[in-house]
Image 1 (tube, each protein chain N blue to C red):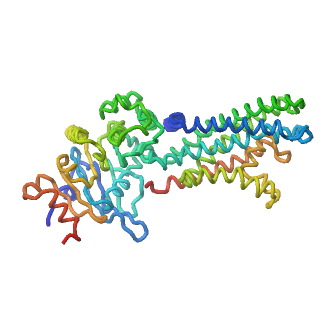
Image 2: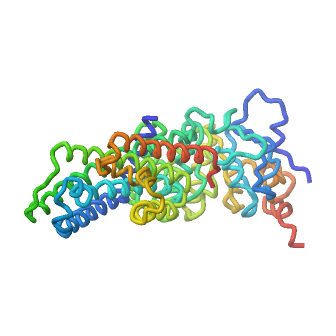
Image 3: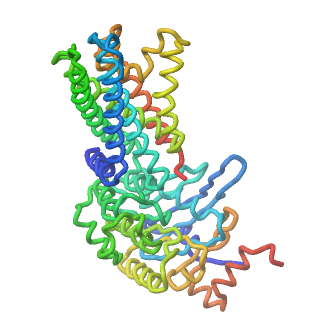
Length: 247
Length: 252
């Protein structure tokens, strides 16, 4: 298992794909946090919860999104390029491969989340300070933001691996994850509110709640519920991978 | 037509477990049988050509043998066990099923390092196999920049990482230049002479005729012949004639 984990960590490091993902994540965090930090009207970001949600909290969504893409690419890339064949020839116990990918991607994903939160904290504070606004977040809030974003992104990386293993098609998986996180949850569950209160228990919302963005859901509970989603996705990917033929 | 050879060895009592033993192997996709009732065995130290037209079932048979796909019925054993039940498969079996199973953005050595890590093979072996396939100087670039011949060599290097006893290769000479084909032949011959066993699937007869000891011919999912090349020669038949007689029907 350790051997397979080391192999998967090398795979994640040895192409430029994940460096590209990381830079895109940094760029988007900078852009979104600065945009909101400078443009949201003063009366809407004078409170702690609004500052967290509208400025700093973007790190949770973006960190989760890019961690999920990292996870999805790590397995769908193997199917796309055919490396799944040598991978399974060397490790025919396929469950080990999926498990190692989950752990490796969770490690990279958590780094994505923590760094996104750190960048959001830095530029968000700078933006608010330059506008002469008082920052209402205290040390505990920042710590929770870093930890919550790290945990949420790690769990979303596991979801990405699980979905990727289940779906196998790279394009379908990537489009599916983007559509879900950026549109489906946001529109149907949040803004339009078609399904009422259920929305806060959806995985994207839980990712935000993990850093304290939902007053009705404690971060610990949010992390626990998101971990259930991650476990379910990873298990589904594990079972599908163990049973299906490789072309 | 009576052809004897590899298949016959399966029915003779033998104290030595064959390296590969495939019995009544069948794979169906719905009503379509990709292969049907395929039986053969391979002894240590032999080089076997697995011949047949495109789509005859060669690759399907190899995937079933190597645990990438599950048979509908029948069994495929390597070293007496299902491939997926082998303890250290990379140290027993090396296989190349496609010529381009690489991430184009990863370097050749890193591709091999990842496989070596997973198989718990010392990292120094990567440099050794690169030299073995004569790829050492040119290799440290992304696979995207490799020629087809270089990819074949890299694939073979991956198969050789664990210093295996059995090599399973699907169309290994594809994309190799004449010097490369000559090199591959010499390499496989030496491998077998040192006690290794080789199974090469190919649809190019010339590629195989000079390398192998015996051939198995598959057509439309069924094994239609197995024969030792020296027996064919003894009967005054060529591999090409035999192959065409068995696999071409619509030509008459």
